[in-house]
Length: 399
Ligand code: NDP
Figure 1 (cartoon, rainbow, N blue to C red):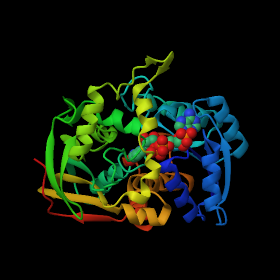
Figure 2 (figure 1 turned 180 degrees about the horizontal axis):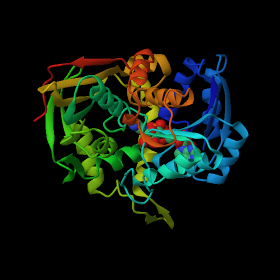
Figure 3 (figure 1 turned 90 degrees about the vertical axis):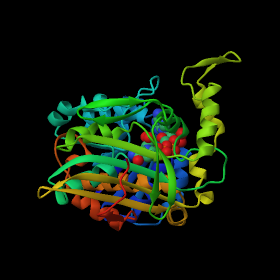
């Protein structure tokens, strides 16, 4: 059916590319382009032989001119951005210049400020409308599936949703005292920032990890979870009618938090450059270099993730609660695609978002968050491509 250009060849991209190859009726031809071409070539060597034709290329995704050249030579139907959030705008610029659809999994973050917001990407709305192309923002799990779950709940289960709690539980154990499950730099920037939630039309800010709750997750068990700021809160606050409060909680073990506190206290998580032996280095980037590469965690991670949303609202004039979630097993993911569940739960929805934009199921000129589209085809695809969801009509609520 079409061609996709995939930018980046890390943990998430590797899963998305495996999934594109499993879905070769849609992804007839793909190009994997990243900073380190050898990684793209290694993945191609692993996957060649199936129906999807795979090309590789080297690209610096910070450089719009290079990107435009690559897009013009390959002429993809969609660009799937699986590099880092810093590259979102240069890639969107290249898509505009070449009138090519755009999909990503994480919102833009400037390199020198640990703050992600949609405003930069939402600013492209008019230009994408004029160009007649689609940008689909945040097609991972969270953001991504959490927005699809919200749209699905709104469409099928509620007249009005008043409260959403997004619960992201990783019950996996990789056996290291400290490692992050996706890009360490992005992960540590996210969890060491202040927390916040949306309530009655405004943001309430908290200290990092200030709000803690305990929850008993299906197939995982009881875990501590902490309130974080998270990207989808911003778009769901606008797109879900009747919303009064949205919060996001993520589980962390005590060992992870103790290590993180220590690293913070000694300055290792700072993004301010320092001078070291005559060279400018960013402590957090140095830390990334010495931590285990998340793409190597697959073989050693056991346990499950459980990520979903608890909704409270009204249906037919009555109060209603509804919980929808996915449970994913790290080892099953590893057996299937050679990655752990965090990359898997992001890479599968990335492929699905690209598929729906590419085959025209989701269309529209402009910049869209995922909950703005019809959730049903995405929900079906989740069941088909390895992330089946479960429902609970009487869940335990988070106080
Ligand atoms: P990785 O660090 O494993 O991979 C990033 C890839 O992008 C690497 O291949 C890297 O190249 C490449 N890259 C980085 N900078 C450039 C550049 N300037 N030009 C070209 N290529 C570049 O990250 P992950 O796979 O873990 O994460 C990918 C994305 O997914 C991130 O944006 C992350 O925030 C997002 N994410 C979203 C989630 C969600 O649920 N929505 C959950 C988890 C992650 P090289 O190999 O040379 O380093």
